[in-house]
Amino acid sequence: MRTPAALLLGLLAALPPLAAAHPNPVSGPPHPARNPASRVMLAVPGLPADSHAIDFARLPRLPVEHVVVSDVRARPGTPVPAGRLAKDVGGVNQHNYLIHHAGRYWAMWSDGPRIEDMVGQVVKFATSADGRRWEAPRFLTGYPPGSGPDSPHYNTRRKEGLRYIARGFWVRDGELLALASLDEAAGFFGPSLELRAWRWNAAADRWDDAGVVQKDAINNFPPQRLPTGEWAMTRRKHDYNRTGVELLIGGVRALNDWTSVPVVGGAGGDVALKAEEPIWWTLPDGNLVALFRDNAKSGYIFRSFSTDAGRTWSRPVATDFPDARSKLHGLRLRDGRYVLVSNANPRGRDPLTLAVSRDGIVFDQLFYLVGGRHVDYPHVYEHDGHVYVAHSGGKQSVEIQRVRVADLGGVGGG
Image (cartoon, rainbow, N blue to C red; front, side, top):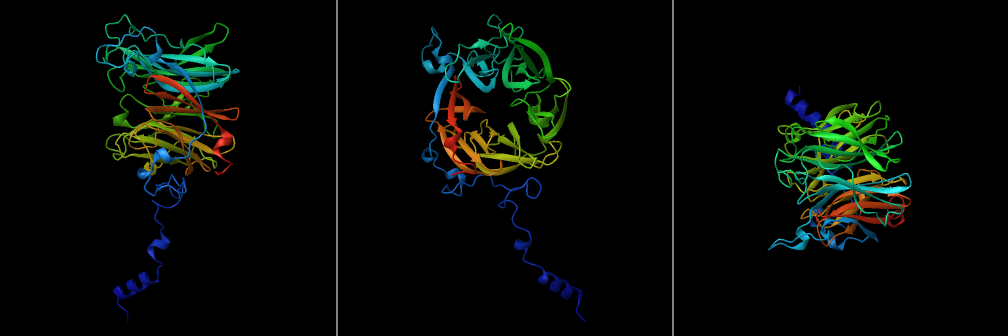
């Protein structure tokens, strides 16, 4: 008679090899339900297996048209203090957003007095008929309450003063809205944090205050439609470093009607990731993917999936897509492909790259878009056969790179 130990060994010997029965999920093909833990996000033929070893200067270059919408360094009469360079004074232009509405292109951004997000920072906008020639910038928000140039706290990092931060355009029920956050300027972010909206008044040629969209919230990009028809946008609360990143779902019944669900935990939760400035999009099968900048300096983009319209999310994992710890943005093109613009060089915010994917999960093309200098904070918009990438130059200019969709190759790469 065989002993129990011998029987167990016989059963184990009859099983298929472990690797065959359970492929390595980390290196296997990613899938929102079957393999959300996969690291695979970049699969460009000819690039090194170690994505941190990519020579970004040698990436294929896209033909672009370049235009400057605003540049604080060009302000006439800006004094240059002793020991400073002209390029280092004049203020900040950062947090760029684009849209095409009512026959015109619209751009908005944060405009501050010295460096980003100081007391007195405002949101400005400009419009263009063709996306190339832009009218002079104008105030969208006005100065924050009690925090204008006549305030003793102006141009400081004090909790006694407030700042606006541009948060994007949103067309809701045919109306053009502009979003901006408001909070104390001492840190990121103040306890009075709120997301507010302004409504474009075409008859009066001005923006009218539309009130609070969500208390204790700053989004990263404006709301997008879920497959359910609801709107959704990412949310960070004033204490998001402790409480994590969330998703706001709603916006249908009212401008300020939202439900907030957790996406990634804060301190004590997903400790390997310090999630910043998340983005998300809908995949061809209706599932969702979210991408995160990692302030823990891993040098990679983190990724999470949702298979229930954003109500729950898989644990974020570090992908093999490199990142410089900077804001990123992407979208699905009308031809079905996806583009992602980011600072892919993990050593710094130079250059901005543009990646192309067929399925919205793995990218098989990677292009050099613009660089040779500090470039960051992109926002991507598609219109009339072109991809428009608004970005900042040295945090002092609002610039646009215009790329023909046809120059991205055929559907599915090439």
